[in-house]
Image (cartoon, rainbow, N blue to C red; front, side, top):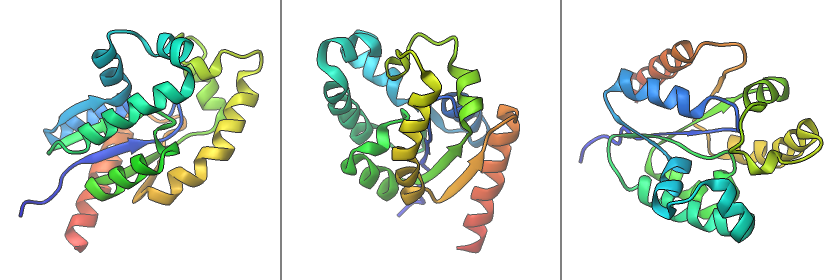
Length: 176
């Protein structure tokens, strides 16, 4: 049996999952996938449209199907959506089918990184900071429950974060 090299990046919106995932895929010579991009590719519409038409529950069901599909691939890096950990099935698939890395970031960094984005329906609110705090309060225990590794991304360059992950993955493999 071959070693499972899949790495799944979890964490809140604005933590750098997509950017770090692309860099990590280059460093490890693996294929990169973004679960949100895959949802949009499969539906032919953007995520805000899905939220508008089907609500968050409809989006989460589509996301569940995508996570199941992507985690069955081999030799991939997958950047998940910030809420992917909400469904127990997703947590189970991520933790059973690869290594889960939690990209941890503070609320201020999230605000900075998400302020210009139009693709974040959960932030369509008068108080994005309060919303991010609410989301984090609910999701952080879920991130921590399945993460094999936690890496802080605040104020760090994408390449530095990716290189830290590679070094820590290699260290884990050497200990096994």
